Image 1 (cartoon, rainbow, N blue to C red):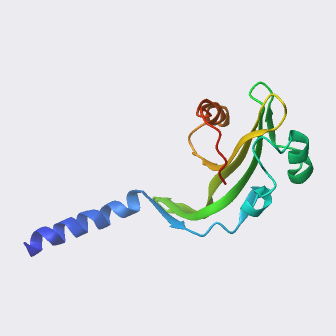
Image 2 (spheres, rainbow, N blue to C red; image 1 turned 135 degrees about the vertical axis):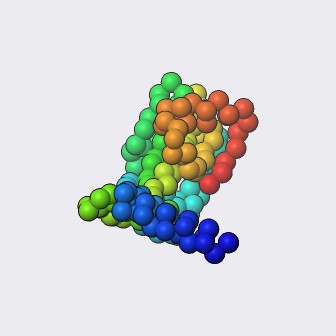
Image 3 (spheres, rainbow, N blue to C red; image 1 turned 180 degrees about the vertical axis):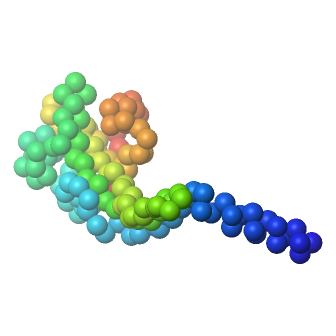
Length: 150
């Protein structure tokens, strides 16, 4: 039994100089802003479906990052760091290593009605592998009922 374990350890040790890749993701609290300007829940207190106008939204939050005129949707985007990825790659007698930040893409979506009043709003995290356009289309499609979330 010991001989078998020794052979496995030696075989693995012999393969290490051939090439290796190590990735170590470490979650972190979302405190660092990587891009954009975060919209805090307290900043949304003025939003009232059926009452707040599109002009009031722009006056309080600034110009939206995205405007989809057909669906009457404003989008405010920001990216927070949700983790750090330590990585190392080696092969032969060379190698490289580094640190990369893992992003979390936040979006505040505000939909207006035909009278330019807030219909609904929601602060959400966009999945990393979903395009922005597809994400907004799904959000608009799910607008069967008025809801206000933050």
